[in-house]
Amino acid sequence: MTDSVAHASATWRTYSLDLSLQPDWMNGAAEAEAVKTAEDDLERGIRPKLPRSTPMRRHPASLHPASLIALLCVLVPLVNAATPVYVTDWCNMDLPEHSGDYANVSTMLMPNQDAKSAMRNLLAGKTIRAVAHLDTGRVEHATFRSVDGCADCPYPDVFYCAPWLPDRKCDEHGGLQGREYEVMEAIANRGGFKVEWALTRDLSPTFNERFTPLAVNFTTDSRFDLTANWWTDTEERRKLGLVVGHHHTDASRVLMVKRSSEDKKIDYTLMIRPFSPTVWYALCLVLILHSVFMLFTEHPDWYKDEKLGKGRVTRFVKGSFSEIWISFERLNNGGNHHGEPKTNNGRLLMSVYGLFSLLSVSLYTAKLAAIIVIQDSRVGSQIRSLEDLKERGGRALMFNGEPMKNRMISAHPYLKITEAASLGEMKTTKLSALMNAHNTHAVILPNVIARNAVRNHNNCDVLITNNVQISGGGFMASLRECTHKINLVLDGLLMEIENDGTLDVIERKFLNTDTCISGPNEGASNDDSSLTMDQMFALYAIIAGGMILVFANVLASGAKTTHAAMRERSNKKKKNLEIITAPGELPPELPEFTDRQSI
Image (cartoon, rainbow, N blue to C red; front, side, top):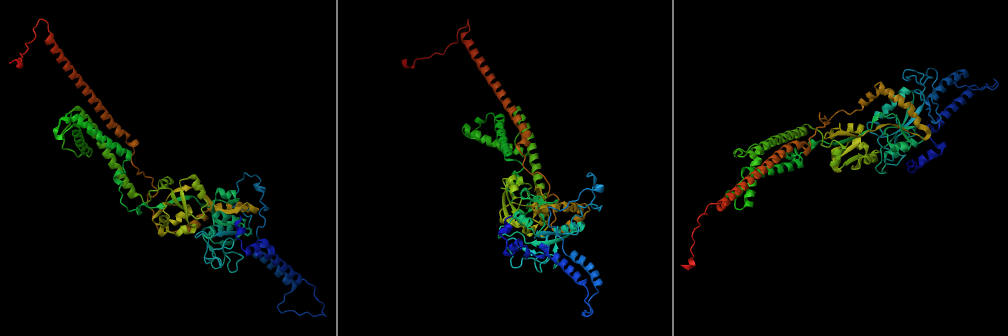
């Protein structure tokens, strides 16, 4: 509210502080002057005639007093009709009481069908004063494109056209145009009132202007009753006493990203993407364990095999690597040079490993095919939500003065927001180039702006992927001076033109022609993520169970063999003892030894 005072020009301060110097349209002097002139003319017309002794010259074109009275009776209403009638005191505006057929407030009101609805016609015959900032396609002038002598002055010297500017009235030289302008005019036609417009420039980068202070300037300026742009309804503005009426515009923020087809780099990770890193680690571990198991079950005498080298360590390493290669060949179902397993443990292990190989290869092939199909069919970028943007670093662009910036950062602290351009520039600029220039991955824009931006021929490489913030926009007034009461009338009339399709006709009129054809799957939610251990658990449980069973069997076989060997040694020792100590038998003859030293 201080901006309008701090940046006000001398002319504005004079107009705002000295009522005698205000333009006629501001202080009602034009209407009073017209009535006074009519009264003077009427008084002169009925003045008593002079005596004949004093002749009076008559102008050939002079009228008879009675004719003059009749003429004035016709002209005075016309003068009054041509003079705008403003609402000077919104706080004391008489609101209609329910009476007659509407005494019962539960009765259905149908203002567009019943003339008794005083609320619908509350502004009939009056003129409301609307101000709007330049918004291409929404509110703009057909001719006035700059501010005379002050292209980038601070508020309030920022008007392209206004009622008090000579030769700069908004209805001159083609007049205003745009979606919001036609919506307001349609409402005025329904309500029987007129709209007096003033158009300012857009935000000034020189003065680092923001939309919320601009809205405060508009709504606290006594020259205006409301601002007729679409204004996002936010908590901050509500707390400032700014009241947004019925939301006639979808002001939700959406995420815009570059299409993935723009990236032509080699995809080095495509072949390993079907499995997550954990799955690949587990697969390598299974391969190694299977090789070691096969070495011990199918080649139990590996440590004696001289072909594997010298020493047990060398033989174990070479034997293990040989089995790893054979296991990898079996995994690919291409190893046919080796013979069938010789042992039961080997057969069991090969059966489990064969099933594991079959399922692993099948899942890998299916997932790889799915990833390729999804990438080929997906027209849009890989960034589909704020979570995806978070994984890329959270860098995004917003327009200068974005009122939802703090709310977005509060809800999503990981966002790194850069304000790159004005809202008007965002509509026509090449957004992908803007993202590249600021090293960001996405643009967050109001839905109504984004929908038009993606249809521009220079933005065919970007698309809308998701809605990231729900909000609405509408005409704005202020609690100050009670101008918010204007929404009581405008909202009902706005809903009326929504219901009968008038608003849709206006919307289609200003909808950009599609110059970019969107792909059929740009909103698809297909998943091309890697298979995780949670998904592969059953497969690895099979091979783990088989290996545990083989390991248990090997241990049991080893224990059995060891027990048999120990039993055999025990029996042999016992037999030897029986031969030596058997009763009734002579011990076997011992060989004779001669003492070589005695020879």
